[in-house]
Image (cartoon, rainbow, N blue to C red; front, side, top):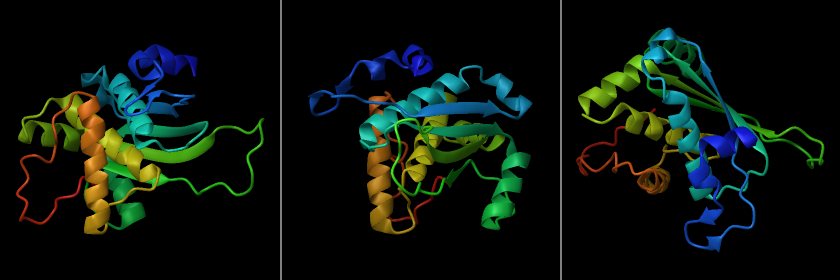
Length: 196
């Protein structure tokens, strides 16, 4: 918890968007694992991800209690393997989320934090998308971290209504982070292009 306070002081200040002072917001613990050397080109990636996830947890108002997740920063080859093995899709993608099974039974005071799941983000695809869309890399990375986190807490975009809810929440979270609406330039009559 002390690690998080140092990384995201603006979130830890104890304010909630509509209700004044919060009783007690406990951000999820996010461990970022860099498994591909290409991420060395983005030395701030870990801080960007932590800030995005803490902000998403606060705004989504998910009652997580003590929770943790892992974010793996990989390359296109690594995410292609995951995408192929878990989704049967033999191509790289930008972000994948793997929600953990919901715990059974009551949690005790001495229990470890609840595991939310894992997120994987591919560098080359993320970089290409940011460049193609002329967005700052950290804005696109924040969006992917938020998107992946929302999947871990139960949001999806399989149905249009669910997609609308998830996108609206993403827009609100990203606005709080000072990031423009990533869906603003989308043709409203075109098929939705999903982030993952």
